[in-house]
Amino acid sequence: MKALEVIERFPEALAMCLQNIPGSSVDSIEHEVGLAKGIVADLLVVVKVLGRSRTLVVEAKSSGQPLRVREAINQLRSIVIGSGVSDAYPVVVAPYISEASAGICRESGVGYLDLAGNCWLAFDNVYIERVSPENKYKERRDRASLFTPKSSRVIRLMLGGSRFWQVQQLSAEAKVSIGLVSRIKQELQEREWLTSSKEGIRLSDPEQVLGAWAQNYTYKENGVGEYYTMADSGDVEIAIARWCEESGVRYALTGFSGARLSSPRVRYNRSTIYVGSQVEALVESTGLKAVDTGGNVLLLKPYDEGVFHGARPLFGLAVVSPVQLYLDLRSMPGRGGEAAEEVLARELRPLW
Image (tube, rainbow, N blue to C red; front, side, top):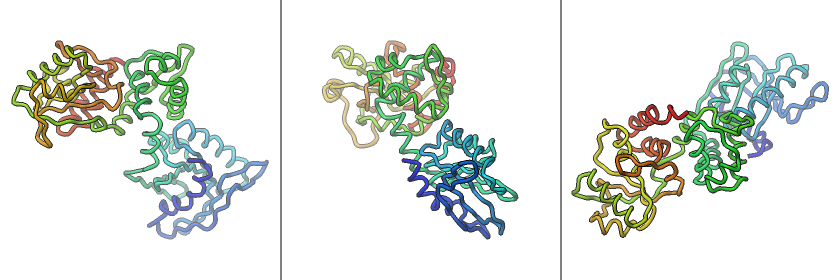
């Protein structure tokens, strides 16, 4: 979304912010206001709250990520100082304001709004805060930028350790274009999730990146086939693994099946396995019975080949990487979240 469209939608967002506030009103909104010394404000808005007027000096951004918000705050400081408006209060508006960006605004004494109506305004004796549990602008941007199948290949590589990467290296290993890696790099920089040096780039806060991915992921993005067998979970997993190895088919255990091999405390009653191809032949060979519900075997057709990256042998069976294991567990019902946190503590944090 362009900044111009954000400006056009600002009045609606401000109205949501002020709704149910006694004695509040929007007295005037001026666009591209020329102030002292050639300074131009995107919007100059006079509001009345609790019977008192205040002038909001508004800077609009197409992105509410931390880097862009810091830019807006610096611009607003210059505008407020040079504006000659005695009651000016700086405000950032964007399609959505991330949690990190909201913190930056508060620390700087700058208000914010986004197009879902989330806001924080604090001046004089006025304090307005509104938090919406859903923001369609955030969900759309996250999915479109970092966590699409090909983009997630790059993120998965960077989450696999603390090494520095060159853009060309990431492109080659993830099997994606240099252009895509460059766009991902820019997006990570805007979120202030990236550290750059002469050695290359790496994630500055891997756990936060993984958490954002987990919020935008479910194992059901894969093709899910549900089956039933009378065999013990361990036995059926070994049978499937052996068939795949003999047939030259890629496979890897995930979910509770994978967690069980890395932590003996995990208990489960349903096997979950990625199978790269020839699922029908596998099902016929191992005697699995397809069911609509109540199955004790899930065969996942990968949404992208990246799910196999970093798979490792554990007790003679292939298991997905700790990153993929965490993601799949986090999206599974029951004690999936608890098992995911153990993977995070035992396997991932030591890597970072």
